[in-house]
Image (cartoon, rainbow, N blue to C red):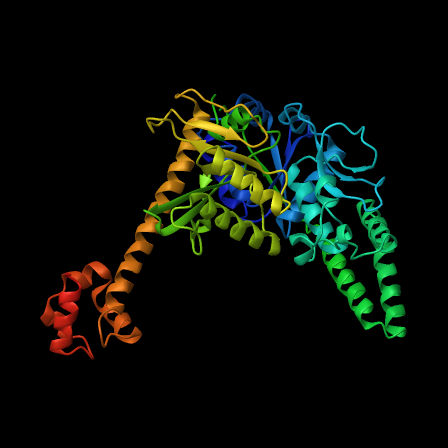
Length: 492
């Protein structure tokens, strides 16, 4: 393939989830990766943008790429894990930077074992499943297993001091053994089923559920029969997702030379992250003297802003000017909903604030039993001058102060500033609506329909304020005298 068309193959790649395998000239698999969007991910290797030394070495060695398209990102994660275990590609090992691999850990020594994400040595007594090549795989599997078997994920200190079921029970991800809502025997049965599934013996569980469902129906225990039916359906769905739909798509590429640095990678190194920070969410709170408080959430994926995923939260029922309460309400609303809907959780949460805001965020994540998410508060310096920020990291007592020319600090500033911009814009919009709403409501004979008609006709508050009495009187249902009342009220 000549240099003039060396990148033509990129236009043929599909916008679909899947796995890509990279081969050397000898036909050996040297790297396996997964992607939510294959075209975007594979193309990123061949852009004229900074790459770290390891990526540059990988790209130099590529002679062929093979794609496997899957139905979902979950399938891609599971297939990636399987291919890496079988092929042992050298660059997958190199890219791990000697970091420990994540596991699923089951504390089988306990009467009510805990199923949890784990990283570190495996000396502790219990069952370890893995290792897996990426934390996202473990988190996805853990999410599915808690929905199917409802095993607890909380730490022992939390488990022993409960007096009533927590949120996990309410969203049907835990059977609440902490308060005795399930017997030891029934819980151990669920533990055994989870182990069978993790060992790949899903057929045995499906057959057992089918048998139990029929037996419960025969004994007219329809509640138990429905429970086994629902679990069997969910388990079957999970097992179906393990099937991979393969699509032959092979492309030859030429060697490309790329020499430089990645801001996202710099953030991972600066924070000492043991995993990739591909999904970052940042929060900020904006108000005027406590009025019209709005919180923002901005999302960055793979270093790029995703504006369609931005969210604004109108804060209600808190004491005026209480930024801590506003932040707590925002985080609870966002992540409780994401847990209930089984949506993706971020790899890193940034908070515009200091130790106080960090402490509030830690409490919320602990309340929702969210673990494995990096949490950092970005505090402005005394002069509030860019480059003087202090980073407070969850679990770290010593604050982190990066040099003003740090690429990691620049990237964090970019995300923080975007969250601040979005919060301010949202606050101004809400404040304008509240002001207009209050003015029009105080005018006699102006009901909801007339308010809406006035706003539509003049395009909002500013247009309405600039309208003359004559122009107002031309609106359907607005008499000259009423137009005069509106005109005067808007200028009071």
